[in-house]
Image 1: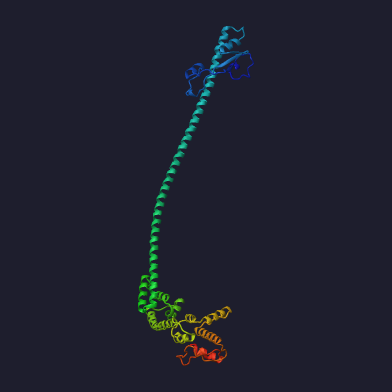
Image 2: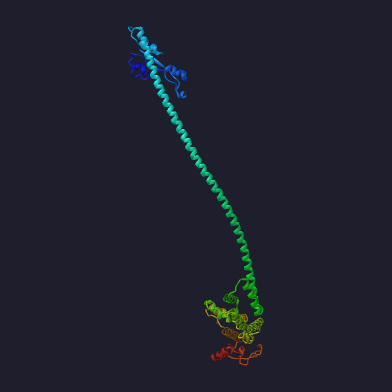
Length: 402
């Protein structure tokens, strides 16, 4: 009986009763109603999950039988009455059908549960995916909005930057114009200092300071000091010293009054400077004749030693120039004051003339020399001296140096 009920357990069969085995090729699948009618069980709620029904093949004593009834008949002993054999066949068929239906329904229910669990898992995954996708789309939307806001902000910043750059360019142009105007005014002030009267210079300076919004008295005085040059700056050096020491400079009115008083003296110096410039622009036959004119006006110009030495150097002879270059190469520096420099040039010139005449150590009178009559009765005729004693050199220095 066990061998007949457990159709798939072939190893437990001893050959005394029929056993079932699967066919080599499946038969056509049964429908819902057919399967229920043949196995005697209820219809499955999910017949689509059932595999095709394959009826078993029954075996007994090495022979295969298509139906269980044939296998039972062959396995029954001959002495068993026919009615008992039929009863056993009916009972076995009912038992096998019931068991098969139970197994079939259990398998079907398990497959249905598995399907439902799988569908539920898929549905949960879909729901979770849709939820995540929705959240991702929301984040993407937020990012897009932020990007659009950033684009708008960058556009505003670019516009502001463009406007700022344009304003900076305009400001730069204005600054360049102001700078050009300041330079022009400085040039005008410089030209006025050189040529125009003090009143005109002060008027132009006042306009320039008003243009630059310079209203404080001390600021005005400091600005005026920066524009003063030469003798005018020297006259006002006391103010320059106070300004450098950050001391009080007083009122603008007092500064202007002092400047006007000193400027009158400065005008006299300018006249003397112009006259000396005219003297130096001429050519002279000897250094002595130049010296006669130069000394009369050099002390009246109020010029520095460097400027006056420059005038003297232009009237040196070729021999004197070469001699002074030689002195410089030997490390002998030239005098730094104009009287000493002039005296050196006169002495060198006198020695060169004496050497050329061949009269060293003596004093002679040259009839062919240029006129040497001096306007100053105390001046010495240098052309006539070739070699001087110490006493004569001292006297020459006193008479020719102012």
